[in-house]
Image (cartoon, rainbow, N blue to C red):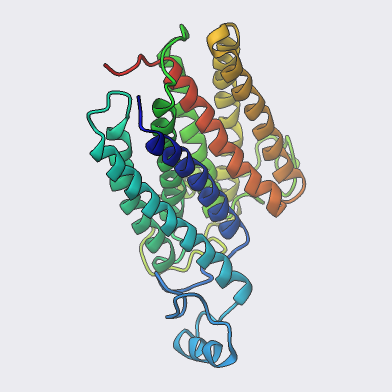
Length: 327
């Protein structure tokens, strides 16, 4: 049996990484991604400048980025929680190594998570130092989701979630790949400020089914370092191309994920898993439409990120039920 301490710690890490994902989305969507122009501190402070003399010194040191306290504290709170998540993952990895002979303990996944989270921290640094470079912002989002996937797999396997499903494992893997690609497109849409490209118009875009687009510029992944990408640098047609790609690829993703959910619901062993996947899928679609129709309300956009993470978790749980127990 997996040690109770490892089991509890694994689930705590899953809850914590989900909170960090939500905080990251809230920080980015409230335009606080550059609330602190340096890293890992904030204007040279361990917290953020709060007193008049600290603010004056910070403004003198960073004249191109004056202090905005309502942004700085959001960025630093996100960093604090991310740092706590890193420590939690390291402790979980240490527990896994200590008990690696325990056959029920998925220690390899948590070890990979411990190494991967270092790269995720580097992406967090580059997000700031490279001034919200889109490829880094998208990578940071994907890194957070990958960390959650690894920790979720660890917690699920430690809880004895395995086998018992006859649904084809390849179908679940394909669903995970499609959802991951859609999350990447969502990150690219957000990083390039393309969420407003269709001007609150749905299902058409700019009152057209196919408005002017520029796919050549839309998906240039690397544009060099030194550019301030806050607010975006693309023109309207390029942002429209990104937005429409995210919107229409969602149809393909939804179709496959719904098929997987329906198949899972036909089996007693995975019925609740299928119901969870279907419910989260419908909720995610509704949140996506609400983002467009209501002009990207902060709480809706943040929830859109959170439900994406929960859908990923539900599919990871379904995958665990299609995977035999380790010998």
